[in-house]
Structure formats: structure tokens, C-alpha cells
Image 1 (cartoon, rainbow, N blue to C red):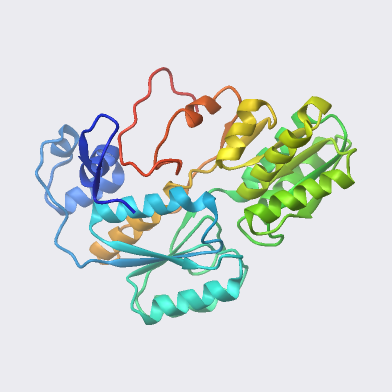
Image 2 (image 1 turned 30 degrees about the horizontal axis):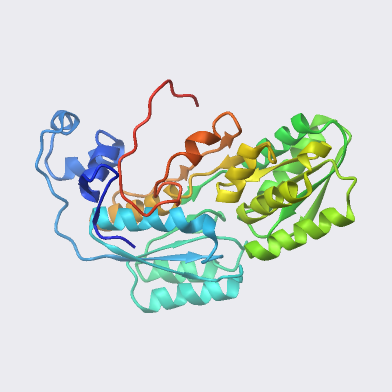
Length: 362
């Protein structure tokens, strides 16, 4: 990770605390903190204050992840690092490389035993995390979920509404494909960060009444494995009308397969989720029709923010469910992502303020 401040492209040094104030100035979270420091809302809105964060311990937060080396979570780790630098705390990134709930549960118990000040965990299993969450809460350690969720005793969820995102995928498939068989690749069937998306896609296709059949196919938890399985599936099923995915690695694998075999020119449609480089390149080249952004940076920044506020407020503030959204990226807007290098998308380690021009669309 980088130091607490990095030069931007113009050589201007911008401290992360200043960036945080600029990003959140006037927002509810910072306003709540400011009120506790005796700063009036008017002074805050005008930027007329010299307040610093209250003196506090160097809180240590632990992220428990299901695929710790997956490139999707690079911006998530940048978000966590930037929030920690802004608030004066630290974090640990741990869990499983291959979506093994047992390994993640062991990581949670280790965090509890070591006296972590807060835990953020991707709840990819329906019940495996209930006991460690209850143990953490009994020990006075706040727990939030991110990226995947179960309605248990965790205090808040930061991430996409996954079933709704899957419905949006299914509705887009209906627009792209007239009829026939399409395949939906899923890295780890049953896991709660992606299975709800597949379920939502199936529901939307069925509701459309179109003669489209979505076949769910497991692609595996690692990026190289996903590409190999996707290509092999296509070579054995050349009559499919579309290939879609509900996870980042599988979507990039579809893009590579589409390019390698010229499938867009054959009328086969492709799309999926997230913003890996191969996915964005595939959209620009016309191999994929779309991908769906869920803002992985926020899934690192906001858990730290909530856990920190919970700690400094003595539990009076900080916890809130945050929907990190659903945005379609197509050939019309992919240039913004390809031409901008930043920590927000994980394709640069430099800390900088980005600017944009023109109207804003939802």
C-alpha cells in the first residue's frame, strides 16, 4: 500500500484526510462527526473549521474475504486502506483464496481472539458465520458484512442488492437474445455473493415469457480456471445464443473466449458483472455488450467508515445498510473507465482527485 499521501498526476501532494473532507463535506456522516466536535452545520458547509478527528486508539479492523487474491477486490483493498489512512486506523485482509467458508470462519475466530476492534466479512454462506458473529458481538466487537449478506446478527450490510442485480441482468439478456439456449456462468454455485444474481436472472427471463432457457454452469473460483472452463463449454456447445456471468472472473473469461473465437461476429451475445481489465477491453472491442458495476471501492471504504464511527461514538452512530448500486457499462460509456486510472477502479495505486465534465446521468 502507498503512504498516507501520494502525488497526483500534476505533482500536487494531497493528504487523504483532506480528500476525505472534500469527498464527504456536508454529508450526513461527516456532519454527525462534526456535531460531536462542536462544529455548526453552517461552518461545516462553508468549510470554515479547523477540527481534527478526536484522539482515539489505532483501531485495527479485519476484513474476512472469500477470494482474497481475486482482482475484483483490489479497489476494495484500496478503499479500506484510504479510509484507514483518513481516520488513523489499520486493517488486515484475510480469509480464503478459494471460497472455503471453513477457512473464513477460522479467520474470524482468529480476529476475535486477537482482539480486533471490528470485523467486515463477506457472508457467502447461509449459516456458517452465525456463531462467530455472535461470539464477536458478545466480545464487544462490531461486525458488518460486505459484498455478500445474510440477515443474521451482523450490524449492517455494504454492497449490492444481489437478487435485484440479477433481475437487471436477466432483463438485459431478454433484450439481447430473441430465443434459444444461453449459459449463465457462476464461479461457485450456492455462494451468497453470486447465487442470488443467478436466481434473479432466471426469474426475470421466466417473467418475460420469451423462449429463452438459461443454463447455470460452474466456472470455478480462480480466474485462469474460469477462462478454461468457459472456453471448453463453448467448444462443446457451439449452438448457444449467449454467454453471461454473475461474477467478475467469469465475465472476463467470457470476454476472452468471445474474442478468441470471434463469437460476436457469429451473433452470440455476452455480458456480466464487474470491471476487470479484460471485461472493459471486451466491451470496447464489441465482444461483450455490457457489464454491471457494483463499486468495489465503496465496499472497502464504507465498512471501515462505519466501524470507525461506531467505535468513536461508543456505539451511538455509524451503522447503516448501504446499497453500492447497479450501473450498466456499455460501449457508450466504457471510455470513461478505460481512460481513467485510479484507485477507485483499482487500475492505479496513486491517490488523486479526479475531475469530470458534462451532464450527469443516473
